[in-house]
Length: 146
Image (cartoon, rainbow, N blue to C red; front, side):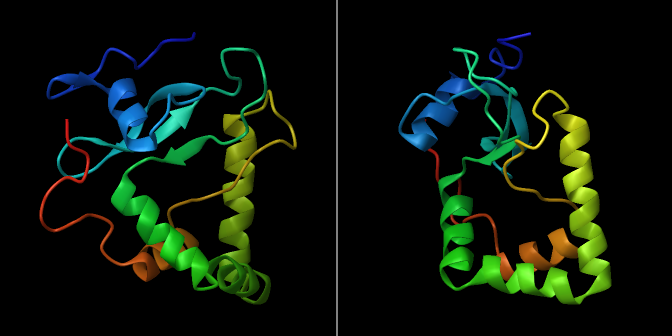
């Protein structure tokens, strides 16, 4: 089970090495690249439910693209988490979207009941957050050099 996805290459480097460069450290529980930027580099990774030492790793999807990480950090710093959480409490459509996202995470990670970190989904909630983030990719080219 461990090691899947590690042999994929982007240019002259394998995905795990590119993710390590993006993070500035070896990634924990790396399984595969789930989303790539327009330049083919890793943007979001999927993690194994447990790391190499067997410790639970509750984050299923992890943003690694430095440009996207910065865009999300700006949204969070501007109160985005609280704002979207409040909207999900007040708007039935968003509440249902968040509930479905949490259920999907539990289905993806049944071996970690109650230990899921974060949630995201396509649909109204996910689309709204992405729209607020703005352009997720730099216009001048990939921000992850090899």
